[in-house]
Length: 163
Ligand SMILES: CC(C)(COP(=O)(O)OP(=O)(O)OC[C@H]1O[C@@H](n2cnc3c(N)ncnc32)[C@H](O)[C@@H]1OP(=O)(O)O)[C@@H](O)C(=O)NCCC(=O)NCCS
Image (cartoon, rainbow, N blue to C red; front, side):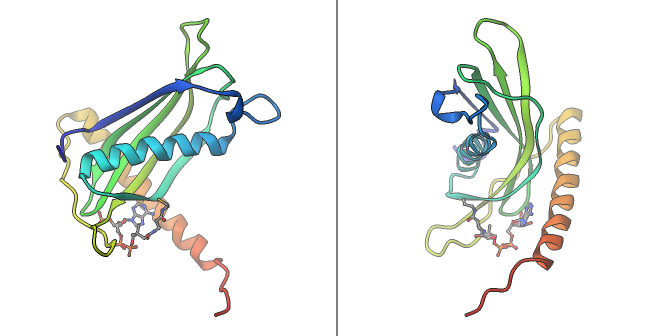
């Protein structure tokens, strides 16, 4: 049901086709996993088709190696009118060990779209329930503001194409 599923978790093995020449998973592949898990979480929460609008604060802090067990966790931490913002953590574990490493973290934002003309469409509101939720919601708010500032700066230098 829309408005009920706050978290999504994907788990799978890093495959030989995911890695670069150095034997580590491509950054682009990690971004694809984040986008897919975010998409599943956004559609699950809103009950509508949704598109990625921004990714904030992404940093690759530790490599993921071939054969690692990868976990992508997406947790809803803020909603607007049509937007949903998720904290994402990507962790990896060598199956021969019990030690989990944080590989990447970010906040990914989606906008729900309505079916006939693809315009932003309202989503169920999420209310923080405890101090941890409120801390995460504040964090999301700050990142969204930073992301919009960066977006405006990038837009100033966007090429103007003829036609
Ligand atoms: C997402 C899209 C529909 C938004 O359209 P728009 O006309 O800019 O709509 P709005 O200005 O009303 O913004 C819609 C929401 O996005 C939010 N938003 C816009 N830029 C944002 C950013 N950088 N960070 C977080 N949220 C952002 C707005 O705050 C608004 O949220 P709200 O409804 O909760 O208040 C449009 O930009 C688009 O189609 N982008 C391409 C999406 C895409 O192709 N993604 C990759 C493939 S899935």
